[in-house]
Amino acid sequence: MENNNKSHVNTGVRKVLEFPQVYDLWRNLVKGKRNRKVRDEKYFAQLNTGDKVLDIGCGTGALLDSLKSGIKYYGTDMEESYIKAMHEIYPNRGEYLCEKVGEVIREEWGNYFDAINAHGLIHHLSDKDSNHLFEVAKLYLKPGGFFLTTDSVYHDGQSYLSKWLVSKDRGQNVKDVEGYLSLAREHFSNIETELVTDHMKIPYSIFIMKMTK
Image 1: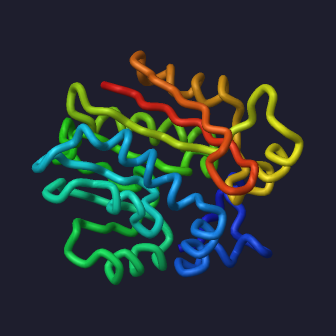
Image 2: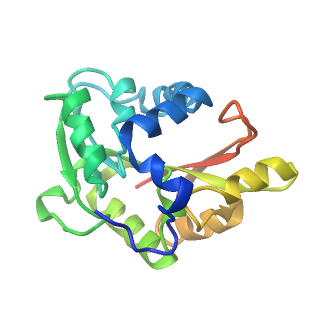
């Protein structure tokens, strides 16, 4: 599927990252995959057998490497090549759907999930689509469940190189810390945050929000 949202750029050199093998190779080279696994294990360690997780913008399914066996996993992504790759890499580990964020609202998913993950997604979306994402996440979460977001970020004290690298992200709606928090506060009151300035081998900063329903 082609993303026509101007908040996301998939042309020129960035186009190669649409290929699952290239995307995963890039993450390995800059240690993003290893560092992500550490943080996924930190935030999703509380989940147990029978709990249900929705991974929105699942990519090639990296979250699955950090989930305990027996957790029910649902992954959605609008890149058909990523979904195909997931069926090859993680056969029979869950349900994988090729669709845009909130494209289909499933009534049976209301108050259904113990956790919802959106890794590296908000900064690819317009503010309108981001608000829709938050609305859908809150609708789908069980009371007490949490919504975890992780995004490239601008912040005080950030080096010039880190800012430049963040600006070259395929997602073209990167915000500062307060920008992300402003979005979250419209939908959640219980918000925990983490600013990570060494996410990859290269200078790169991310902002994590854990929002509990």
